[in-house]
Image 1 (cartoon, rainbow, N blue to C red):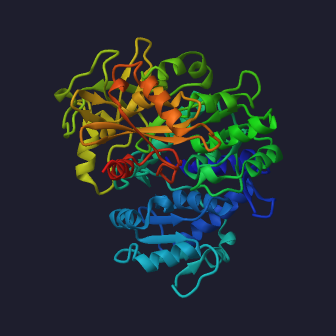
Image 2: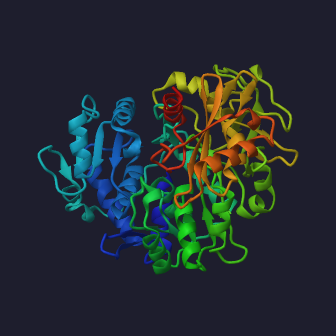
Image 3: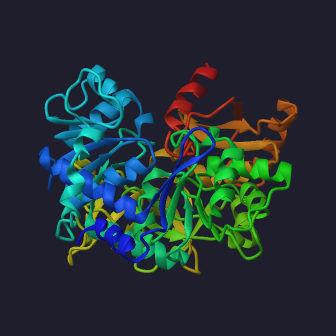
Length: 538
């Protein structure tokens, strides 16, 4: 088994079909067919092996999305090396910790990544092999161009035949509740994800995907889709230029698109202002955090009748777990969200099982040690199935805290979220377990409370934090909001009085721009907000 096996199959069956197109920064695109992607990845694979990067060698990959990134990634998979993928925007300190934990032996990156590696000592003790994508300066090693020189003559490099449970990659979490952890992926997990994505969303070979999230885009070749990388900074989707995104969609007749909630919000506002329609889109997928119903409604108005936005629920450690479409949200569940009942994230996808267990902050060694809660009762969300990772890389304590083993060997992943199941089997997300606010009158759950306040037309997003035992609501207004803040505060306090839990909130603070994760620009760093709120109330 090897996830890279999908590429030579596509190159053989559809050699001239577009595999990947990357923005060239001048309004155009560099286009590689599946035949060329296969050829380039073969040459890189031979070059990697010639320099000792082969089966089991952990290799940091810090290359921006584009044809070269796709070719290098598939080459690494072909030789059985283990890519270590991190978000550069997670911060220098966290990034250094992550790379030290991963114990990489090789480093492939653009010049800027190599400069940072030297300045901050990333992998100093373990990295032995260097490859520079672009011009190399003083740090030694090979360039990508030098790596592949003469390697075309060696022809195809068949993917290494690997065991399903053999390590395939280390993908780091966003670190929204602490230092990012490396989730260990196997080729079996990647294959299961491909099957679930295809089954859940009806993706067909020959489609064209707008690849705004690099990790998701790596599935495109396995799904038989062409990947189009628009001109944008993938680490800052909230700052993307909507016109450049739309240009990519129109140029390639994109049928599928992934957009983080921040990017979806930006595109929806632009589309509403300019009356834009997207007739080629068959489906949109938004993940990373719940997208607000008003944003879903605005973006869905840009799509053809019958087309909707799918919002899968999951995490780096298990994706997808469940999914729900915008039509069901807008017609049914959004009203409950606005009443403070949480955010519906849909039913488990085929092959995945979800159970709600009592909230605990300690490790649970055996599934027999806990119980499952009935529908309607809030607890901790757990998931099991073929896409659940079994461990964190070199983090045994974190693994013990997040994984529960059943007697039959099944691993139940603790999602780190709280929520409940309804009578129809749907999952309702109520917030992160670590973010729950303990007050003198009981526990308050963030997402459940915030849904009520986010229904106010002037609110972009809100965040419940605790200052001691006092619940405080932080509010970020819409950028074009001209309402008086005192008036908005009074309206929000009145809104809070309509529900027992939110009636406890007596303090509302306005924040200009919430600190959020770099990956999706959507997960709120509540610890930072809590510290800010504490300072404001002194």
